[in-house]
Length: 99
Image (cartoon, rainbow, N blue to C red; front, side, top):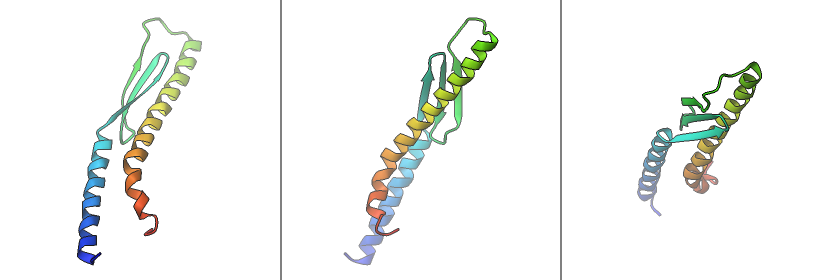
């Protein structure tokens, strides 16, 4: 394979990788935990937190709610990471010998 063709292929791959990254950044991921729903984007920025209750909360409820927020947030981050690995992992497979 000549060098010019190799460079063109690398540029195509870089363009695809950039497009995937932009798409990931604009994708929303939702994490849920009983009373709490959290939505983050691919940059792991929190876009919304929803508490799914209309009841008055006690001190014990607030502590439980804090734990649920943490669980929902971690779930949303895991989804974003898994999607990123799935989408971008295919680009790094062929590069292991070059790095």
